[in-house]
Image (cartoon, rainbow, N blue to C red; front, side, top):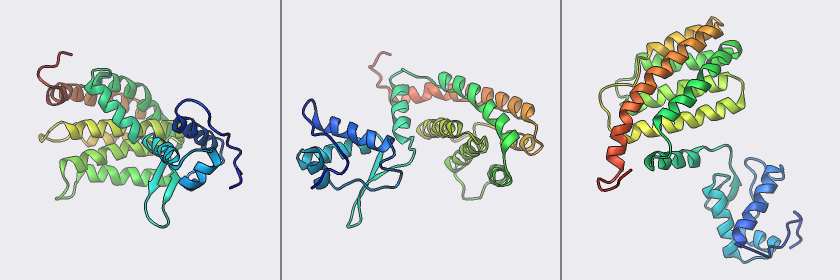
Length: 251
């Protein structure tokens, strides 16, 4: 098969890692875009001059890092994935368990980033942004009878994700998604049945500031909101560690 992609034959180190690195460069360089299908294992093996098991391992490596998704079936294969924070979320949860990061650090980051997101949303949110935020707030104030605690947590997180998008800054939107992934996963891990972490009226007040185009007020409300929820999450952190760290492990 002709090497149309100008990939170099691999000669050193762990072949699958080198191969994955070359494919990363092709993806980052725009040769393969989100949704594009990569060549098959046999095609990649021929392009790189390696065996099919090496090609398979390279694809698996890219899948683990979240750069590609693998679909089964006649129309399946390896496809370039969109932005996916699931790998980072899992890593952060492991770091929390190991004592390398803390809920206090998460609160610090949220306190710096989310007030600015809210300020920008008050300046930039469009009609569709406001409509979706209103739906989220209404679902928090009047949840469906069958709505579980975790459903309500997910909805509260969705409000913050929507704010990230309303900021019209892709970096903030991505960071907010990661922060919410971590927050929801953390709350999911800790048994809790005594209600939500915060009053849904706080989201209602923030939404009103956004609708009124009051960036400074939106920023102030968010700063106070993060301080409250951060304190509650830190209370839960001890329970999380008690459940996940073996009794005989000294941290």
